[in-house]
Image (cartoon, rainbow, N blue to C red; front, side):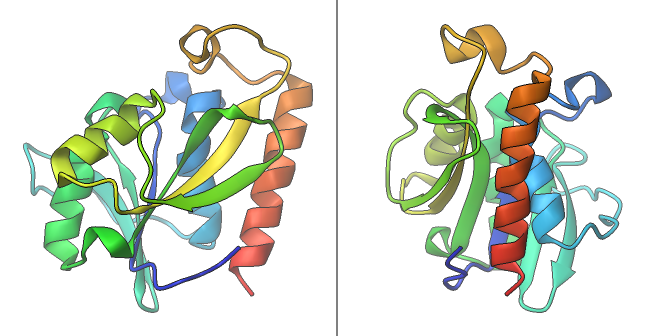
Length: 174
């Protein structure tokens, strides 16, 4: 995985325990792995309470928004301002139902493709010019993404998706 000059790496997901193990939370899991499984610092108040948890490793800050997925832009904008980075220095990891489970892609400067977390970030940053680590979740579950992304991963999909996360983690740590 290309490290580029990312200064802020964001993992999208939903904050409640009931969303753990769902397809929609795979972005936050990827960032926890990329950060080296470190304990995130306690959330701190910048925007209406607690917008994100973070950990800083070398020159990179890793964040997990404590907002719901559809409000991710508020947390990302807050972190961007707090840590003094530009949109071009941000990489956002998220689930992508247009990509087969077990695969991933890195893109820069593209639209939301219907992903509400990405749409929120684009709206708040007023740009599409940030990086996206798109982690494929299209596997055994069929239909529209909204019909399955908040459900628990099937064992087969989980194996494929976590295989991709292991590859991302190994590649990123080089």
